[in-house]
Image (cartoon, rainbow, N blue to C red; front, side, top):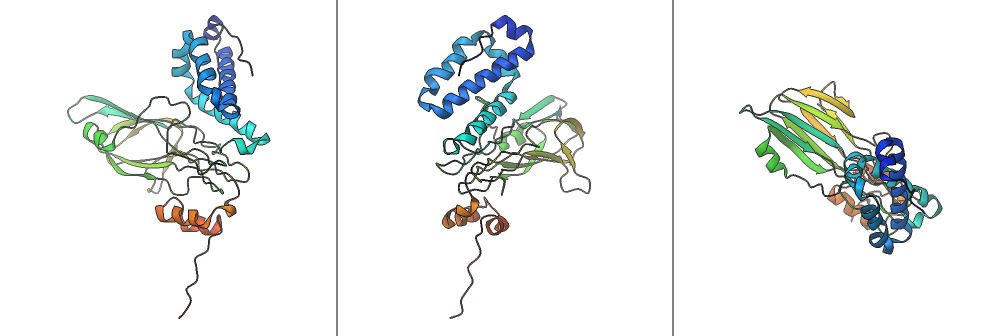
Amino acid sequence: MSLPPYGRSTRMSNPNRFKLGLFGLNCYCGSIATTAPEQWRADAMNRMVFELQPDIILLMSGANGFDATARDQLIRTIGEASPDRVCGGHHGAFGVHVFSGRNAAGELYKNLETGQGGFGGSARGDGSGPFKTYAHGDTFNVPIELQEAMFPVQFRSLSLRTDSGGPGQFRGGLGVRKVVEVLQDCHLNVSIDRTRCPPWGVKSGLDGQSGQVIVNPDSPQPVPLKKADRDLQAGEVVLVDSGGGGGYGDPKQRAADAIQQDLLRGYISPEAAQEIYGLHPKKETSS
């Protein structure tokens, strides 16, 4: 696969041509990573650094969301012909959510967080995660204790999201559920993708769950958000779910001990164990 030879001036002056060039780069990188992983560092990444160096800042700052989806779609396409070489889809969304305003001292603050979710299962085993997307780069998590100390927010919970990983012989990795209460009036900005395109399964594996953001999820009138700005009042609650990875293989082929382990760890619900994986509780016999 060859990379379109767009020059710097062409990409900078025409955003559509830049996106096409970026898609070509992602196809190139994705195909190398999938079909010839030993060449990944030596070839694809070097080309991105040395051939696109003049535009690398634009590449990193303006198109990362597109980047993750393009790579995921390429892997999916390869999987249609050779499913044993690929994994299920990953959560693929930055999941940006930003709380901003003034604290009790009247000082301006901004607390920006991104999500981490599940990656797809494959012939090698269950999907990994929760991690950032393929395109996050060096984005790290901020400990909730530090966020609560610096900003007027309180975490009601931060946990793995039960049943978010796509069922399969090898299950998709799990997403994360975050429930945050705001302690003062503030502003919320949300930008979340892949809500209508769940992380797909491979080779009869099932889809993982998509991410979502909901304001006041337990109220009579919960408010789902995708890309939006909203003023919040003290005491309101924001739920942020990241997606899980797609499953690999028929869920009915999953090992019984693996299903039991998932149940004990809370990765799957009893309902999913019975209805999707076909695991039925053992009947007690009278002595």
